[in-house]
Image 1 (cartoon, one colour):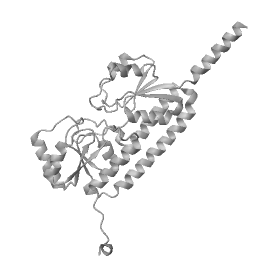
Image 2 (cartoon, helix red, strand yellow):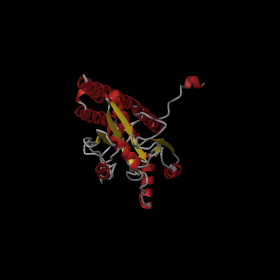
Image 3 (cartoon, rainbow, N blue to C red):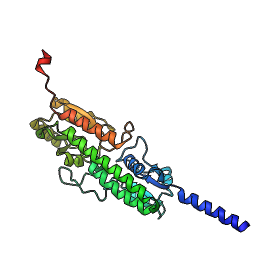
Length: 295
């Protein structure tokens, strides 16, 4: 009898362990959202990125590394965004797979051709592609829930297709000659590829990089020649430098969420629609008033 009870107890424990959701850690809020969308209640997502963190200066603390212990997957952006991944891998169990979701995303070079823009999430098409990579990894880690992951990824992909359609519809307001996207740093090249813009970053890939005086003077001359109507700052950094350029040119400046991190906007859809709306309002021609109504 005791043996039978023991076997029953072990069976119940096994069932509970089997039903426990797989743990997935993430190094970016948008990747956390993607994982939650695909995994639902079949996984437990742990976001390691601090609420007010800076993407280009973040490095996980010991507490954040501890929070990732036991994860089957650790989601990273890749493309060099997380230079600490090697050290982080050494701190985790060999059972934790580090998945760089940007690794299979085609490169888009920054305007000077020196390196690829790593901010691949500014393209819904890229997010769709990354979601398939994540879905396949989830199916491998937890094959029992393969059907759920596949169905949820299809919904996610359909939503990214909808974002692309909405973006193209919004951008129709902007004439091709006005599709010059001047930004604080080289973070919108993937977006520019998708929506047929010419990217013009004032600084480099990271917000902290600075151009020299001669380059800045050349930039101002170029923007004046192209009759650029608006330049775009970064919501998480000081707009002072770009505001000064805008004042010198007599044009406006508007903020964008380029690093995919803004505590006031907790979903990809909110960030994408915010960015497209701001770009359209900054670059699209003013609507003509009805002359009869004006009278």
